[in-house]
Structures are given as structure tokens and as C-alpha cells.
Image (cartoon, rainbow, N blue to C red; front, top):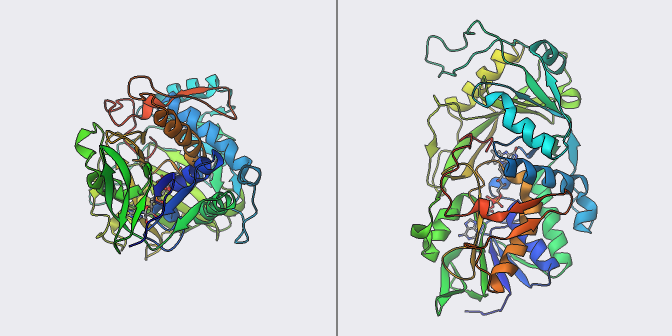
Length: 435
Ligand SMILES: Cc1cc2nc3c(=O)[nH]c(=O)nc-3n(C[C@H](O)[C@H](O)[C@H](O)COP(=O)(O)OP(=O)(O)OC[C@H]3O[C@@H](n4cnc5c(N)ncnc54)[C@H](O)[C@@H]3O)c2cc1C
């Protein structure tokens, strides 16, 4: 059994965990990041579509994404290292978000974008044609499963129009970006331990005191941060704090389809991000001139909660139904016989908003419940989680007097209490990956 003292232990070396490690190290703390997998970003971050977009159902969500966007623009300078493995980069494409009755024709989103000075175009259905290859702009809402005889039949109405937000895009390689942050953190003294599984959270005198690894190693620290992604609930159970949280997390299995572009279309170079609440799918251009197609969780699709250590890694009908839904909008889209893409997990919270908070165990912090939509925010989360940890460790009570975080790039102060584990379920949430 070995012992070593750290200021903070971070469980999980995904994009959020590493961002917290880097920001804590920037504040002078000696950190240790532990991951049971073989390297940074090998968990759910590796499967991420890494879409950087600004529309969320709440003003807080929009502000956070807007702030995050600037970190990606400023990536190399922010990290202050050049990773020998290469640097991930942000590619701007713009995003077209469909208006629908479901999202109140995006009135709350426009309000938030206006408040932050974000530019966008409001498009009529006819103007939307300029952005998609030979689209069908009929409405197909509400969505159905493939075995429904009305699947794919237009309702006779048109879609309501859309917003085009030019400042949106995606990051080239989410796993590499996480490695970039590891390099940045190591550069200022952080340690990383891979292939090491945390099996217990240690406590002393009512305070967290460290972790035990599967091989029996005990590692001590007065601060432990749960950033275990889809395993967050398991770690909270080890710490004995889950019962004292109003919002819980669980692993949700999802499929993302990759399909070739329609013939003659260079979607890799000319494509945009789309969020189509009418057909219930989002897309982004993918390397290899592909469409990458994810779900916006229409009501007809059952949510598949799973054991994060034992779930089906094969494609089911889900990826196919997503492709068929996109083919309603882009009828020239080729539909391959065999599904290709990603099967992975979201760390889902009850209201699809993350939990960024302290916990009922002093010294034990939470950056969890990222619900398929927090990759883009990781650097900001790292920044305010490091402030939150210092704020609480100085004796402030974040539950009663929540940290007000002054953002670096935009003129905005965010009440971090918004992300509390003890909030009421956010009824304004889309209850989908949109957040
Ligand atoms: C298919 C998919 C598409 C997505 N698309 C987008 C998108 O377009 N835009 C966006 O903003 N977000 C997106 N997301 C969400 C985003 O990727 C996640 O919010 C983010 O990657 C979560 O990072 P993380 O560091 O919290 O978790 P992870 O990357 O899951 O990291 C957690 C780590 O904890 C480790 N761990 C777990 N248990 C233990 C243990 N007991 N001991 C040691 N280590 C442990 C795991 O091995 C893992 O590496 C998507 C997610 C998925 C799955």
C-alpha cells in the first residue's frame, strides 16, 4: 500500500475532469487525476459529437455556451502548450436551429442571444433552402417510430422557419482536445494516473480524505471531485451522498449515425450544424464527407437507461430511425444497409442540466449529469469549479450563498447555484440533449 498527499483528487480524466485539473493547477493546487481507462478522454468524451452551439432552453445555458465558445477560439493560448500529439481545433460552420411549437419558435433563445449580443439570421422556410441540399421543408411532427404506418408522412404543413447562428461549429477531435488539456495540466505540475479504478471514497472526521483504488492503494487529499461521467452515480453511492441530492444522475445509452452525403454534395466543406426539432434529429458535417446524425429524443423514442459497465455496444434500430428522420428532411441522403457511427453513454440528470456543485460531504465536489451537452462548456466549467472549490474550502456556504462567477470573455455573471444538486427540476428544460 502506497500513500501520497495531494491537494485535490479528480476522479475521471474526460474533458470536464481534465479542465478542472488544469484550472485547479493554475490556482496552485497539486492535483491528481485518476481514470480507470488507459488515457485522457477515453470515456464518453471520445464518443462526443463536440458540437459547439449557443442555443439552450435557459439564459444560463446560453451564457455558458457563449463563454465556452471563446475558449475554443483561443485554445492554444489558453492551454499555453503545444501537445506533441497534435492540437485539436475548432471549425466554424454555423448552425441552423428549426423553429417549432415545441421550442416556442425559439423566442426565449432569441431573447438570450440578444442579451449577449450574439448575431443570427431569422430564416423563412424558403430562405432555409440555401443551407440544406435539396431539402423537403414539410413538417413531420410529431415524430413516430418506424413501425407506425404514418412514419415519414408529412402533415401537410411547412416547418415554421429557423434561426441561423453563424458562430457555431465543432471541435475536430474531442479525445485529442482532452489530451491537450492533460498536457497543459502536467505542464504546471498536475499528475495523472491511468488504468486505476476508484473503488471507495474515504472519510475522516466527517470530511472526505481520499480514495481507495482497486489494487488497494490509498491516495489522500482534502478535496475529491467526482467527474466520472456515466459512472457518476456509482461514485456518489461510494461517497454515501446520493440520497441527499434532489437531482440524480444515471447512464443513458445513445446511438449516433454516420452516413455519406448525398451524391455531388461536399458536406464536409460546405455543411452546417442542424437542430431539427420537427424531425427530432441534430446533425453535423463529419470527416469523410459524412452526415453525423444524433437524436433530440422525440417523445415516441424510449430512453434506454443502462448499467454503465454492461450495455449493448451494437447498433439497434435507433441509429436507423435517426437516419430515416434526416432523410425526411434531405430526401437525397443515401441510407446504408449497415449502421455506422457511435454507441455511447450520456451521464443524464433528471432535467438534462448538469450538476456543478459541492455535496453534503465536506470536500467532495460534483461536476456530473452533463446529459450529452456539456463538452462545449468544459473549459468554463473547469474555471468556475476551481473557484467554487476555493470558495467552499474558505468556509463559504454555497448552498445558502451561491458563488457568483464572473465570466472571463463575456460581460456576464453566472449564479453557479443554478446548477445545484438540490434545485427543483428545471421545468423550462427541453428534456432532451438540447438542455
Ligand atoms: C454520443 C455523444 C455525443 C455528444 N455530443 C456532444 C456535443 O455535440 N456537444 C457537447 O457539448 N456535448 C456532447 N456530448 C456530451 C459531452 O461529450 C460530455 O458532456 C462530456 O464529454 C463529459 O465529459 P466528462 O469528463 O464529464 O465525462 P467522461 O468523458 O465520461 O469521463 C469520465 C471518466 O471517468 C472515468 N471513471 C469512471 N468511473 C471511474 C472510477 N471508478 N475510477 C476511475 N475512473 C473512473 C471514466 O473512465 C471516464 O474516462 C456528447 C456525448 C455523447 C456520449
